[in-house]
Length: 298
Image (cartoon, rainbow, N blue to C red; front, side, top):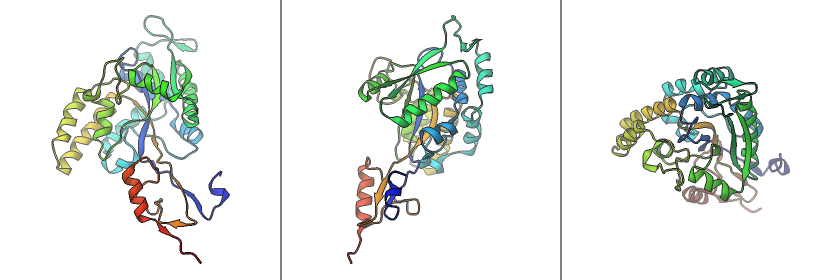
C-alpha cells in the first residue's frame, strides 16, 4: 500500500519465502527446555497463521515440521512433513496434555515447575523490529493460554545478539542458518560441531542443542557428492529434527525486495525467479545487475 500504490505501473515487490526460517529458541541446556515434550507443547500452542497474517502482514506462511525454508522445497520428505504436523500444527489442547503428562501442573492461570516455581519467562526480541515484536506479542498471548507467562523483552540489536550468542536467555526469536544445501541449516540448529558452552560466543546453535544422530548424518552428507545419497541423508536429518524438536520453527524469512521499472527492466519476480531482490547476497546482486536492461528513451 505504501510503495506500490504510489506508482502501480512501475513500483513492484517480490518477497519469496526462501530466507532462513525464523525460529522461537528455547534454552535447551536447562530445565524445562531440555524436555522435548515441553518444546513441542510450546510449539503446539503457537497460532502461526495468526502470527503470519498479523505480524508478517501475510508476506510469508507458517513453517512446516522440517524447519527448512521454501528454498529447499525439493529436499522435503513427505514422511517428515506428515510427522512434523504432530507438533507444528496449532493445537492448544494437545499442548496442555503434553505439559500435564510431563508433570507441569497448572495452578490457576499459571503452570508450575516440579519445584513449585511458576513458569514465567522473558521472550527476547530486537527493539524496533516491528514484525518480530508483534510476533512475540502474539506468542506471549498464545502461551498464556496454556499457563506459561511470557513477558516480551525488547533489546537493542547488539544487546539481543550478545544474549543469544552467549546463550543468556530462556526464550528468544531469531533467524537460523542457510546455505546452498540443507547441511548448513541442520548443522546450525543441531550440530555439536558448532555447539558452545553457555557463556561462550556461539554464532549458531544459540539454544545449545547437540544431537549425536544429526552429527553422524551431517558427517555422511559432507563425505558424499552423490545426489541420491545426499537426499537419503537429508530425509533422515529431517526426521531427527522432527523427533527431537531442537528449536521451534515459525515461518520462512521473506527475501524482501522491491524495484522500480521506469528506467530498467529485467528484475527478478515471481514470473522470472532467477535470483532474489534482497541485496545481502553478493552473488545474487551480480546476477541481477547483468540481467537488467535500460528502458529505451523515446
